[in-house]
Structures are given as structure tokens and as C-alpha cells.
Image (tube, rainbow, N blue to C red; front, side, top):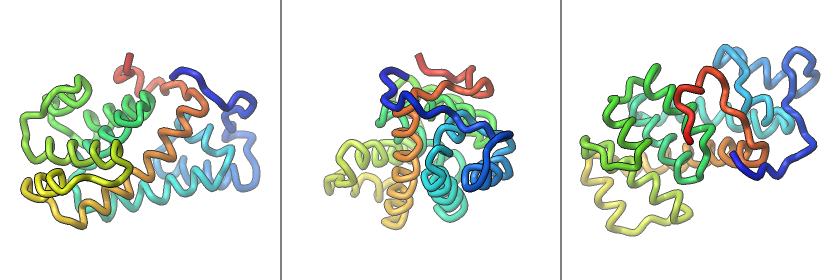
Amino acid sequence: MSNPFIQNLKPIDHASAQGAQKAILDTALAQVGFIPNMYANMANAPAVLSTYLHGYALFRKESGLSAPEQEVVFLAVSQANGCTYCTAAHSMIADKVSKLAPDALQAIRAGQPMAEAKLAALYAMTTTMVKNNGQPDAAAVQAFLAAGYKESDLLYIVLAISVKVLSNFSNHAFGTVVDERFAAYKVA
């Protein structure tokens, strides 16, 4: 990441954290099993990390999108926002946890068209939503619906975008270093 604009705040160390910072890092640790660098930075404002974790969990639980589809959404948002940290993290999750097809992940990371039309429509809709500040044109919405998605899926894309804005923008602010466990998926 280049040009971090937060210079004086440092990552919150879970071992020495207290109060609201410790409480939210405890929650994060329980959810993911470790404290990613992003979370340690976000914990400087516990409400930011709390809101992120809450929205992220709800998107995962309630969206109705499959795990691979969820990763397509998160990757589309992260790429559109230029967040190399989240692109690396979600690439690893897509590959190792959510089992997104390798060719689809490779296409997303390379900025190439995806072979699976439904995933391509999901990626295009999400990217359009981000780039147009939540105001897609009628043709984009019709293409999305024609691919087999529902209008309610658009609302869950809004939720995912909101969650990723918290993480993407925080990572820009701090110039967050990619964690070792995501390093193999680092974006140049």
C-alpha cells in the first residue's frame, strides 16, 4: 500500500490491549482464530472493527450467496477500491476456504473475463455498484437479474460493499502490511 495517511496510530497489540480495544480483539480472535494486521489497526477505533465484524458475519450468514459467490463480491469490492491487502486476504480465503474455482480466481486477479456467466454477472454488478456509488444503470441490473440473481441480492451486495469500505479504507489509511498467511496471494 502506498501513502498511508495515518502516521501516529500503531496497531493495537492484543496482549496489552485494554477496555473496548481488548473486548473487540477478543471477539475477532474468537471469530477468526488470529488477529490479522487489519484488525489490529482497526481496533484503534473499536466501533470500526465492531461494525466490520458484525456486518461481515451477517453477510456471510444471511446473504444466501454461496461461499464462492461471497468471495467474488468481496474481491470485486476490494479490487474496485484498490485494496491490495483485502485482495490478498480474500484470494487466500477464496482458494483455501470458500473453494472458488481456480480459473475464476485467476481471472478475477488478472482482470480477465470469467468463464462462468453467473459469477461474471455477480462480479460485474458488484464492480458497477462500487464504481457508480451504488447507482447502477438499468441495463446492468437487468443483466444481473437475467443471470439468476434476485433483487434482494442487490441489498446484500450493498452490505458487502459497506463492510469492505470499512476495511479497504482503513487499510489505505494505515498502509496495512499483508499478513504472512496471505503472503502467497499478495498483489504486486
